[in-house]
Image (cartoon, rainbow, N blue to C red; front, top):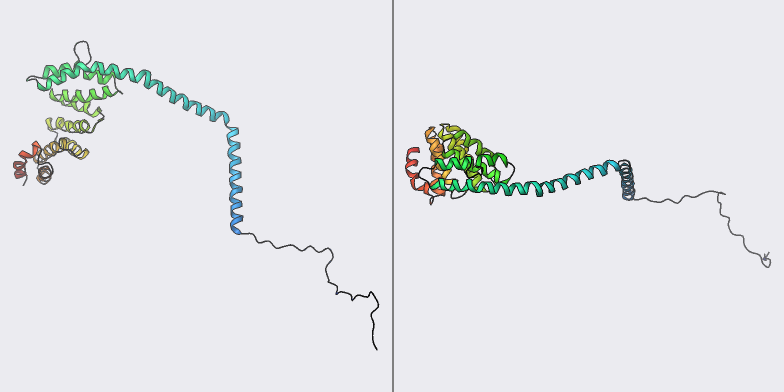
Length: 261
């Protein structure tokens, strides 16, 4: 039997079963790196907030500290300008006469009186000893220690020479090395060979040059010979001959090498 659809008839669609009111959560994949970065920024924000809080709570203290630093800096600059600089000028003026006496003593046949004038003063001006004391902390006062040490050494006042030369802070390589070696001379003149050798070797190692190095290599070797240290003396005499053959000391070193062998 034929079946006819009524006009307007539609075939019913298949019902989709769905739980009423059910919430379907969409799964989201979170990159682990994004999570870590977020945590880091979160911690940074927390740290920044804590820092801001600390600054706010300690504003007065911070301002006081910064103000104190500014006062110290300004004070130092003013001290340098109005105290140290004029003191340097005065010390240099005082030292002029002493330096003149020192230079004359270097060429005088009987220099002791001139060294004494250089040390103790003349013509109403201080000598090196007083300048070093009164103007300590200045360049002129420091240099006065060197001149005083050399003057004492030439006057055979060896403990005083050592004391002055030890106070000298060598601003240039040459006088700094010479001061150390001259302390060695002062010890050697007192028969203190071990102390003298220590100073000579220190001077040798300070600054290799054609003037002081061969001089103190020679002195070190001579003291070592006197102490019976022939092997050490031979080493230093040989170094002098091979490295500083044009120096005045090298002209006499062969005889010393023979003694050390």
